[in-house]
Image 1 (cartoon, rainbow, N blue to C red):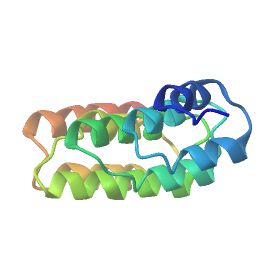
Image 2 (image 1 turned 135 degrees about the vertical axis):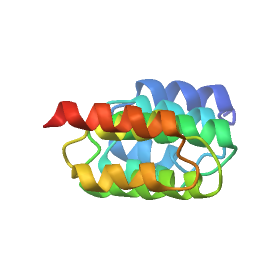
Image 3 (image 1 turned 180 degrees about the vertical axis):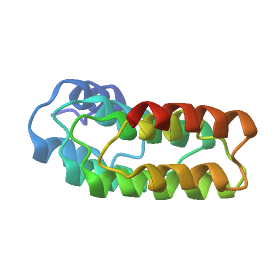
Length: 139
């Protein structure tokens, strides 16, 4: 019996619909597996919540947060965790702008919960403007 390769994990993360298998894959050390899980519509909210704390590099973390923010099964708990992780990145000077903008379309969060991201140190004037425009569309 052969040991599963990272490519095997990636394939499962893309195609599997069994939530217990997907949850086990969330413990993978590979960010590309996390991204595939965050894009898989069968990934359960509990797994998405676990993924919201996964960290690798600024680029991978930003992509993961954007995917989680847009996931169709992300519930309020997941979206609050994504918002908090995004806020932490902004405070550290990172630019998770795509995740911030993805959160603007999620009505599970209030406009004030999302708008607060624009007041953080890492938020540029351009992000604040886009944030305001996107949130205005929700009204």
